[in-house]
Length: 237
Image 1 (spheres, rainbow, N blue to C red):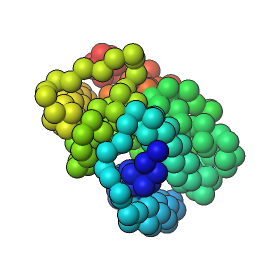
Image 2: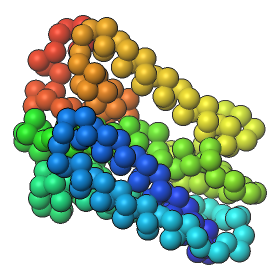
Image 3: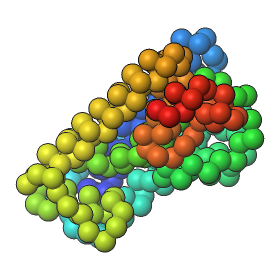
């Protein structure tokens, strides 16, 4: 088992999550919400842990199917634990089990929720909740496949472990190229949806969170009635 490579990849996962956590910090700054300080603190902890793990001395960058399975499993656990911390420390979801459930539901795009009043959440919490759907919709490891310089069949072993179903097909000879193509399509679809929602006069924040929540097919919304209070045009989009 290539433990050093597993730690290295999980380190990168935490660094990426820290980068993702910067977005709700920006949202909190725009809306002048104190919850943003919690996101900033979690970001720093996440980044520190990621950098420490990334400094692991790697013997070889090649790893096989079993390493891929372990890496993917641990990555989702680590992502979910760190991703739930802002909900806990902002008081949005005070129960750690509920917060973890909500976060896992977001990253896995399951869409189940323990919240009965989502409109009570701050803008930065609503943004992060919907953004977990967008991150999980394509899979953060697929994003990493486009960045990490792995060798041999390592990319394919990660992709197989990350993807649902018994088989995985490549769109291009290189897995890295396939990952880039998939993410370009995913980002383009999200941007197109945001534009169509803005055309229907949906507020920018609503358009962003709605697109993040639906592009990953999870369904997290920012209204208690989901899309019912929006116009028929926006519902059709």
